[in-house]
Length: 494
Image (cartoon, rainbow, N blue to C red; front, side, top):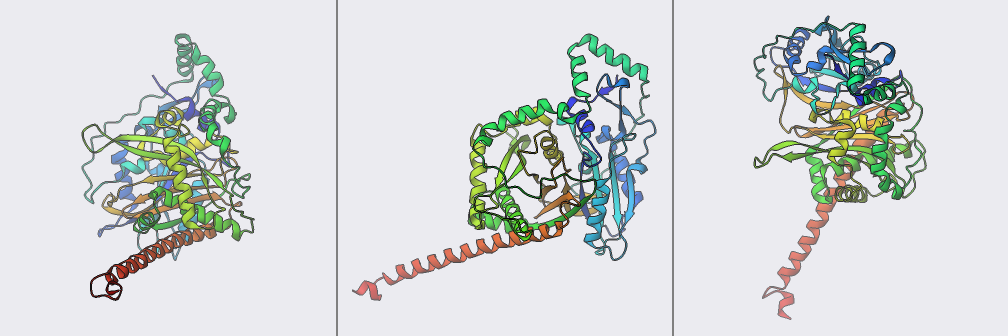
């Protein structure tokens, strides 16, 4: 029997348009080993890891006349070399050229007649490294069982483990008659399935996702009742088919120093950096930014849950909420405090969207939180928020792909209707790597926004260093007073 696509997964196929291809992905930079790295080596690695992601050898098959949701079927002509491709940058191989390539690749929709993923090996980087670009359709992110190819290709050491035995043989693809027969059998044994099929195979994405949107809207309605309206911004416009991509590298050690000085969490500091960057960017565009103005971000969050009695993570608690970025606040330290207060308050209140609710909405797999942000964002009215921000804590140790050390990783989260910018961040091996993905026409100055983000981080760091210096002055003054009160000193003698 075929595996029928869930209602939510199918909705991401139905809501896809030329201007909103529903795939997410990422850009990773690798340092090649001494013996080098080539396309053949990557193909061999991916071929070895495909047994861990069986969905990546299946394609979508529609049911005739749309009487039921599509099904997953084995691709009888699966060709790994079609999905794992090779590209190269022209000289001089700059990061700007790489960002342009990422934007062009991610702008193109995936071929629905094949498994819905692609991977590109990009050679010719000026520093001698190479890049891997991945993209997978949101329909592949099928809830708790979701695992991404970009996760299983990485190892904890530069020694590539032996490949598991792979005895995969594609099952015969069902005929149209068999698909119709299976669908009618489901309707007979479960009459409610007929109503679901009529509703969930509708081509209007707003109808498909209506039940999901109601769940989200109901859970955040109390918070929205007291929230201020987000400022009108160039982030919420009709978007086209082409994209821009850029990235920012931040030091995790610097962010920790800011946290020690100003309080909050690393997540709070990252959001404060983004808020400061958006403030400067809007001002540079000539937009009036007034005290109290905010931009509202849809923010999915993951919290590790220790396994009973083990002291190690046993799972993930997933939550998502709307966070107001205080772009109208000129003081960076106050921005941190305002964001910290919001997240601390939401964590303790009934307004916080908890794990059970999110799993019921969109499902969750630990390596796919960035995709989860897009899934949740796509099912909520774009009038409720300005952009999606995903921030995933990654391992603080090096990871390797066939002996090549990964030195940086940048998420690429898809855009939805009237959402011209998405921001994804991941902490990895001492750094925080931020990917900015935008509509090409709406954000022609995306590079300016990335510059503003670096400057916002520097501003917070400098402010934190000033706080430390001020604290030292106070301590030195106090010590001087204490010393003057000792016997024999001027003050003690009087």
